[in-house]
Each structure stands twice: as C-alpha cells, then as structure tokens.
Amino acid sequence: MNVQPRPMVVGRSWKGQRSPDNDSVFPSPRPSPLKSTNAQDQLMAALRQRIRALGLTLAEVDEKSGLPDGYVSKILNPQTSGRQAKWSTIQVLIDTLWPAGAELTVTGMPAPDDRGRP
Image (cartoon, rainbow, N blue to C red):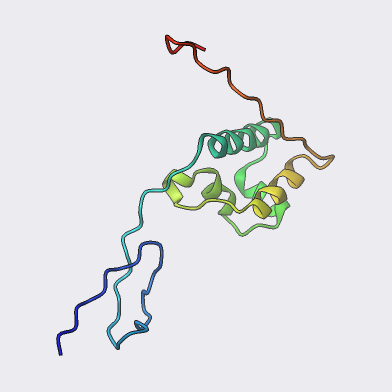
C-alpha cells in the first residue's frame, strides 16, 4: 500500500499530538509573520499613548487590569511577540485606562484624486 503524507495545514498545530489518520507525530508548522491592520496598529498606539500619559509601567497595567504578568507588553507589540489581543482583552485595557469610559471614533480618509493626492 502506497501512503502519501498529507500536507501540513497552516494555522493548525499537531505538535506533540498524534495525527488523526495514522500514528505519526506531526512537527509543528513554522509560525508565519504576524500581520496587523492599520486600525489595529492605531488602536495599540492609542493604548500605549494613554499608558504613557498616566505615567504607568506595563507591569502596573498588567496588575491593575488583572492580566497575566507581561501580557500587556506582548499584545501592544504583536510584531515581536506574535500575540494579538482579543476584543475582550482590549475592552479590559480600555476599562482600566479610562475608568469613566471611552469612545472610539473612526474617521475616513479623503479619497485620492486622479493624481493620487488626497
């Protein structure tokens, strides 16, 4: 019987687990570079700016928000840590940094003209 190995599914890790098809152990895939959107980058920048304005360290934000030690640093720097925050975690940070509440405003950019200028 000729058994061909199945290609690794990106985004799913079988590290340390048995394949559902046979008894071989799959290696874990290499992580792909984290891609963030401009909106995510701007939101993380606003959180960093607020932390600086309050004069807090990231460790203090971890403690005040109830997040694990070092977690705020990881989610504020997703390009180096590989972590992106869930919306529920972002809400915890917003509630911590703006106890009276905060409002998110999205402003559209002007469309470029025929020459590519806004």
